[in-house]
Length: 375
Image 1 (tube, one colour):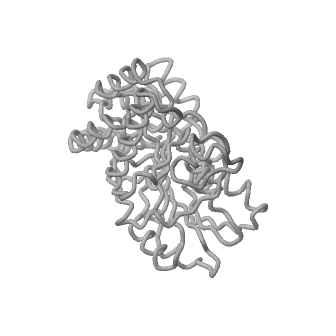
Image 2: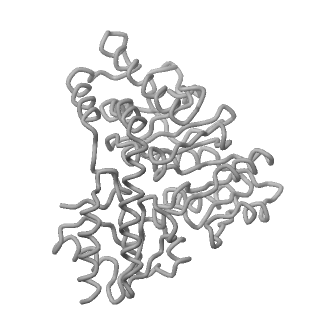
Image 3: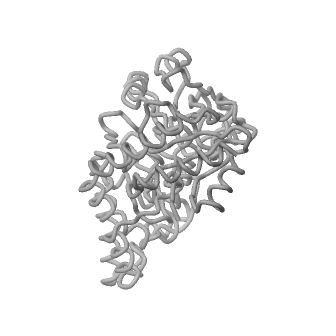
């Protein structure tokens, strides 16, 4: 099997990650913050060091502003719904449904007006955002790296604009953290949602929401926190007041070795993803009946296209059944960018490259696509 669906979740997990998961599952099954016995204390210590590891990775000063969630989608829901109010919100056509659905589902309830920025030739232009600012604009939400085209948003420029106008800046880092070094302080990011099972090569089962000190969230979940248990109202303390129920300790334990591994191997991983992406993009550009949607100059591992005469699902089914190649078809949960691209009826094929994909696998994919397109 050749796996080119790394934007969904990375197949490759380093041995240090696997070892951490096994060790935690075997020796640290207690609930952190729920008891004072030795195992619970050790588990709580593990959780703290995981917070500190990701805080250091993104340059967030206070580890207590790291909230562990059920997924990156859960983190985005917490960021958006915990901040919504009457006023104006700006987002982009690149956004995933984990941003669009909470926004549009609750817009009427909160009396929120939503503006959606469409891409220019080079993606999202901060000047387009600045032009539609209103007196009551209070939040801007941006997908750092598009899960459909791979386009990269100008975080620094948008963050600078948000700081100037006192606007909350939320970033969906699902496709970027681990692949791109993100400094939340430098980019004036107020909330960053992270999917550790993707670019960081941790395991599935949890997400992360990182908050700046100025963020004050409303609760969207309620339950046991291990703190203020005599109170029947949800505590406002960070992070415990926003982490209800039992934390996925085993999954979280994979975060510390995953970050260390990524730091150690970032340069060679980046080069491999760049080189394999270049082989695939250059090959697709030679096929006359293939339409490429990823910008030709991008080499960040996300490559979307269609083969003339086939729906994206048909092409992906052929790649899977006849060539044992795993890719992704459809709308990728991002409908507005497909409307912009003109692919809303059937979506597109997405190849997403991982650090373990080889040059030979890229050539095999291209040979398969040549055969399919000729037919």
